[in-house]
Image (tube, rainbow, N blue to C red; front, side):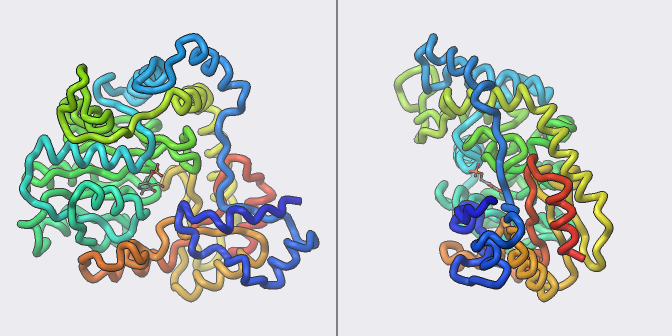
Length: 400
Ligand SMILES: Cc1ncc(COP(=O)(O)O)c(C=O)c1O
């Protein structure tokens, strides 16, 4: 019997909809007493087992290089570039998806030298998007999303009343759903405003179809343990513009490039050799992991449909998400309560949107009708590679 309630206290991914430990409903009491069914957590990451790490760890013992772009980080970046059909100079790793955004935003600012200090970004995203933008000195203006793509759309921004103040646009690929990258490239070339894409959850999609990597706009990706490809914490910067990648490298390397003189104001955003060990082992086994992810998505898709519930699974979203979209906020609230009461954890990965977080409540914003609506109707269901068909049947039965 798994009683561990530690996930309930995990605030990493905005689990504001998970039952508060003090809300002891009959279902939760049954779970705690051991009388109820086993609780299904919303995420239970599975990274490479120790045995698979050991050969790489032994290489660290030999080289005694632990940090600063060591040989394992180099190997990971080179292999990932090849896997994605990119040049070696078009990929760098870093220590989180947030740092990938920070590095790219700072590098973009220094290369473009755009005077605008306003950034447009969608209201419906994980808090890290806004945190990264603001930590680079931009002011944020939150834009509504499209009801079909759940993303900020380039056509909508072209006529934005504040466009003349804008120096950066950060579209987000929500849950790893591919966004209109060609549209963003056109937006960038037509307006002269640089675009940096928060593609945090897109790696499995890009590994399936690397032709998605755009020519002219860079992508920031997360390798967080909960993502489909995980290294614990970690991030990737992808761009076909090698000059931008080199500038990002400098930003994330305390400003250094080939000498001990800082050439730009930098930070330490480097991936450590230990993280590269996990990332390399994850890459070794990723074909198998993708097959396990696919099995989970297929089991969800095969469940008898529930009236009024649309299930979103891979490949429409990243494999690490299973989402239930329902028709009204009331239906969603009922479902969340029922699932939680029956020992099935759910999570609103993006909370109720950025303005619902105290830290971001003060940001400028457009009318956010769609963002608020989607946030209230989309529920993150359990999704991890160890989820069994029986678990999925139990979850989907509760949706009906
Ligand atoms: C949309 C989005 N942006 C940025 C991030 C930040 O990535 P990381 O947790 O690797 O810093 C995440 C992580 O979940 C995310 O979902």
